[in-house]
Length: 189
Image (cartoon, one colour):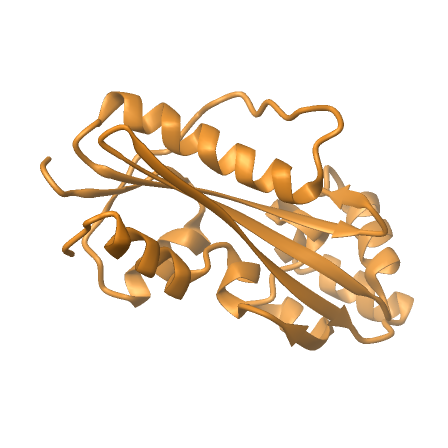
């Protein structure tokens, strides 16, 4: 497995993103229990979870380049996780309506005992959304497995008024920066 690339994520979106840039990779989902420091900032949370995911797989495959990633959505200092039910998805989208929130994707690359971890921050502003618009979107089922209760790459794109930063980071993996960091670590793919 010399110089191979492993994505330590079961996210179909991260898989699709890596496929866009044509790197050969294997997926080995990191089934770790997520441990977060109680007073960690959203940026520290995203970075720490990405590192934990990458490290778990790197211990099993020390000669491979491992990419771990985690995305955190935050508004007014509060981290918005994946909704546990329809009501929670509606509440989250109502909170985001007409406001700007931050999406932070932490990325950690491990290779032969070395590590590079970074966090890409992107501002996303939503249109003012009516209750009917929110309910209609939630009824698609799309928000249910996504931090912040929306997917910018799908029907959730209709909610977004403006974005400042890396679009791909909002989807789940900042491609250009991840690629550049891999190259800095010696990846030849």
